Image (cartoon, rainbow, N blue to C red; front, side, top):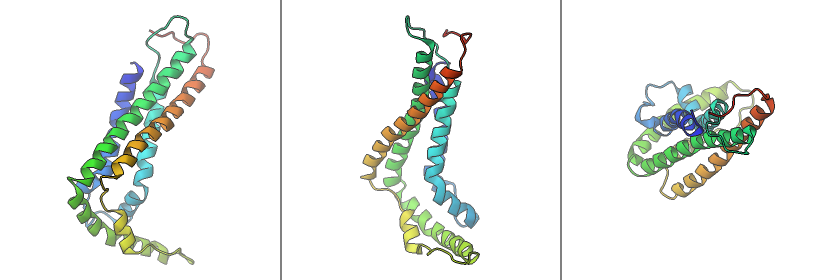
Length: 196
């Protein structure tokens, strides 16, 4: 498969993870989810999504092979180009999904998110207090109002930041794809399979 198909395949998986993270309030009930799981989800959700996009971008770059030969262009250059393209497709797909989810969360799902924030805050506060009670010198705990404010829905002006994040993610994941392409090109041998 070419870089676009490979990127699309891994991009779909990254999109599913991004949707699950951004629309978690639709299927998570803060009353029944253990407080430590709820606190971990809210603490590391953004990092998990970015790590997932980067991981699947690297997998896409590792899986792609040049399928279009161009006269006079070395195989390594074709490999580098296709690795970057496959990784960037993953990042763009996930970024557009997060942009759409931000728009939905700021409008359609705003009330559901506020209700989720109100229900989740006591569990997160209770978990933070439980952890702090086990430490000799615990750091100051954020108040419930600050935690609840962090769980509130985005506003429409956040769409501009979401668009900028698409570009930044594409650059980051594309760079990771370039590194993978360079490594694969250096580790290759003259007997490497030629592009089909």
